[in-house]
Length: 360
Image 1 (cartoon, one colour):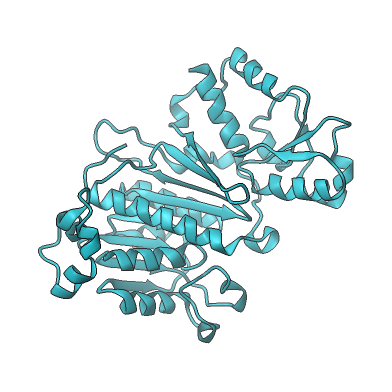
Image 2: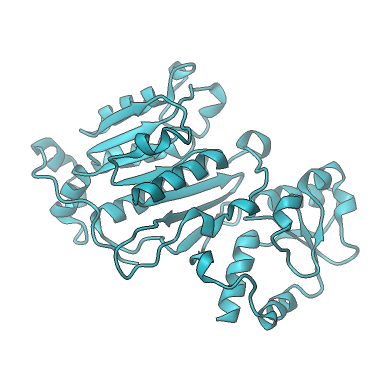
């Protein structure tokens, strides 16, 4: 959906910035005014890791005026396959120092490095003053704190997550312009439905996908700042890197929707899985909020311990988790054990969206 620009245009670009961003100015949707809006923008980036690193590069190159980069971590050697602002010589140094260095080498962007761990007490203060926030953190605890602070401040939140070969990108905003429906993190991930999520260290992450997802998040921020194009507010972009597919899942405010879709809608979708055995690999506290009718529940750890035993007889097995990352891990282990296993693309997120569409 189109938005009014978040930021008023900066008074004027320096001659060097004008020449450096000349190809932006040639874009009719952006133009010189849009570039000046970018120069006047203050964006906060949470995390200078797999997603934060390409964000710093893209937004500094785009000419954003100020970037506040928040990360309390230091560079490790295992970061370097995906965190592209860091170099071998940076191992052991603060990640925010790399962010400040690379931005200065690209443009006149000012980086405010905050080497601190976010807590419920300091998150809102750390983000205060930014026109928008981008969350590239790697724990749901931090994501929940950042989302809560953005709701408190009334600023948009560009949100992305990546595990293995799967990723999601969307925008949350509890106070959008009049006529635009608000959507917040709890609409995508109700707090009571989030179990213990696996880390990158546990399931791995494809480094090249981090660049793609970080670039998409940067583009969402640029569109919000300048008011061009359609925001992902109300839509989740679901990326399957292994199959090179991207698709949208509609997202609306959960508090405005009935808890259950009509029974007929569930029946129609269940028919699509007829002849298969559905295996839900989420944790017990996650499945308490609902499962696909007829699905079997075997948590991921148990599947990985004995993949062959997770087969549902002779029928093909369709593996599902919340969004796809754990399902891909389980399906790969099952296929290696000789089981005919595939993944329900988009997981329960896509299933629930399909229920909404079928009942509309």
